[in-house]
Length: 125
Image 1: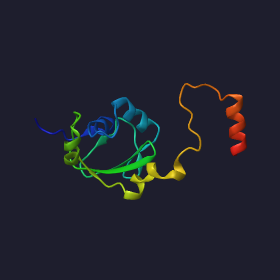
Image 2 (image 1 turned 135 degrees about the horizontal axis):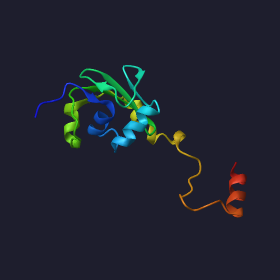
Image 3 (image 1 turned 120 degrees about the vertical axis):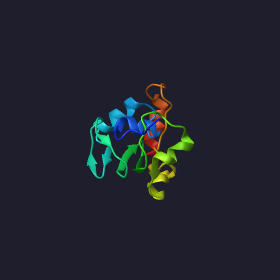
Image 4 (image 1 turned 90 degrees about the vertical axis):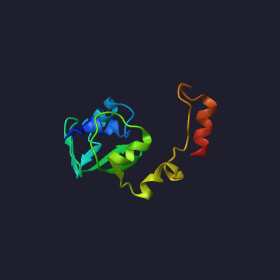
């Protein structure tokens, strides 16, 4: 199978496992979270070898250089053949930074805080 000359950015981001689904990659492009060489891109923009892609995934801004193009999702060990990770180590440490964690964590679906929980919260603040 021959490699294509260009691939849509949303398809490439999905193929190299930067986003879990192609629709998430498309939404990220539409929201302006994906840039190529510093310019925001639309999901239909073609990617070429050698371009630098920056994408916001959660709290981390990931940076990659395109080494090869592919339209099909590749296994995790093969991603290194398609993209070179240029993300600074400080950016990868962000999720572990205690200053960025929320002060209070309420499990989803527990509803509104009770009167006692509100009092405890006000006392804490």
